Length: 208
Image (cartoon, rainbow, N blue to C red):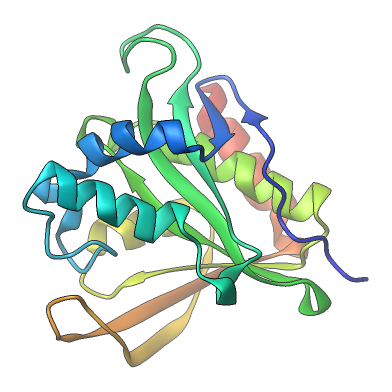
């Protein structure tokens, strides 16, 4: 079976709604990524942007202006669906993507994820990943979803492991960071056969 590349469509959950990135989202996302704490431990925008203009340029570089080599990548902004403790409905709280798709190998990368600090530790990430994993496995026909993070980013590793992903290993000196140092990348995956158990675990978390 050949999987279908990701498509820009809205994915809705109880807490969040994932909307395909539009030019009108860039300003809100730039405001969010100005927080220097978001760029610790080798995040894609490390070192932190020094101005709003620089943040806006990086938003277009990291999420909007997808390189031709990653033409199959789709970025979604994450917005709250209802008013509540997490904020008013419609608030942009982050972004995430499906990309580097290999339909013939039924493999795709779920990554390029960022959330504002206010929503760290909330169920925002769990539902965002639930919606994207469900899309990848149940609608697009992928058999393997890869997730990865900088070896220095322990918070991100804990979040990925909490999803139920399996740690595959570490790619040593995998890619250069913006500051010129080289990062080791921790690689995880979820397979189609593992998805029912992962899905059940996420649904249990989201219903608590």
